[in-house]
Length: 365
Image 1 (cartoon, rainbow, N blue to C red):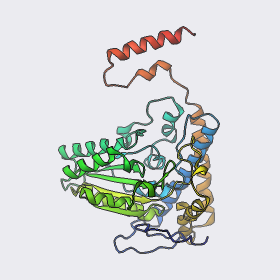
Image 2 (image 1 turned 180 degrees about the vertical axis):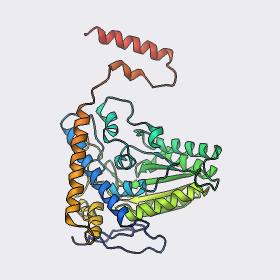
Image 3 (image 1 turned 120 degrees about the vertical axis):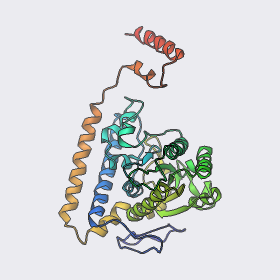
Image 4 (image 1 turned 30 degrees about the vertical axis):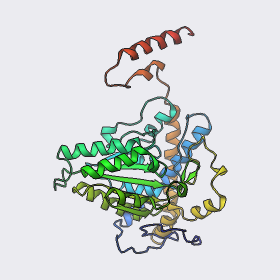
């Protein structure tokens, strides 16, 4: 594989070049050993294969919608590997690889998009909130949770067996939302143990990042008074070490940090989008040459037998078959259940609406 043309702007912290060779950065040294690199590779291949299967399921009418992650596997797997037992994660809506790396069953990630549930997985069990469809709303949830950790003595105490932090994912489009900027203000003002991880995949649907910001998104943190760092989001080694550092900083009482993962969405925004209408073919080709899975494979190839890569792919294919089977087994619940779990306590209006809906639906049956 030839080395792609240089990026027009700084890619950020990089420890693994697109040709699979290790490079140095004066700020960070890779933490991942050979075994962890193999784990990273397996997780990224699995995520891409499940993503492909879910896309196919949507095209076949089995999912209402799917949000592809192709191209962002390193940003998600590398950062997810830095999460510890007392941390909590607030995703946006594309963090499937994060969920799968943390052990969320594949089928639970698609429950919402199958239309059989308001949510997917047990957030308390997996220390990961369910997806936030409203852009940037999760950033405020994350800061509130982080402030609660401080009030509860669960962050910044100096006890590694007690301290935790919050990792919240958002996209480049969400960086333009008021909620995100309000979250930055509150996090800075209260020293909340929150790491904001912006996956800058270059396109907020059809709006390029360059139209949203005249500066690197990581520099936004300067104006709020906390550190910001840009990372090559297609370099899983760099993503892992920078997120590890940021979470340790937050757990220890150092306050918030913003990470900008400079990556690329090599797929539509969602399956209802036609990315060919706005993503230039030449741009897409450049980023395909920086594929995060390919570059880690090139690194591992010198020390791993070719058969191991085949085994990883076979395992991913088996998992995709399981996902398809489990998806088709997700039968819709009774329609009236849509009124449940909207509020902690059901309101009078909800009871009235449920009664009307039940009677109306019954009139056709």
